[in-house]
Length: 88
Picture 1: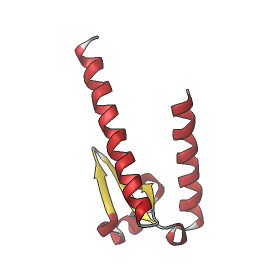
Picture 2: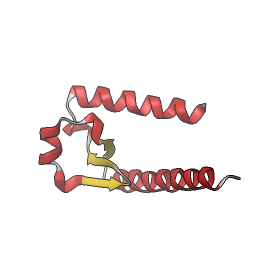
Picture 3: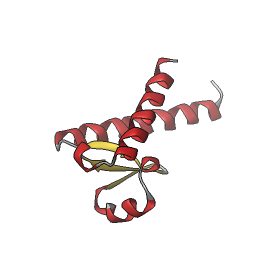
């Protein structure tokens, strides 16, 4: 296997392992792990104490009740995209 390909696979594997661990931890507290791309920049700054950085990506631990309708829709779209990417 080419070293560059191996390195990319290695980083992808450990990134998704860290995301899985963060999701399980958030679920223990009754929260969802929401990608930063789903949130408005103003809310991101107010929720800085719930921010989790994994690699270059930011995630926020939020409960469903705290999410706005738009954030909920974006979260569902992102989850659906990830689900189809795993299936492919």
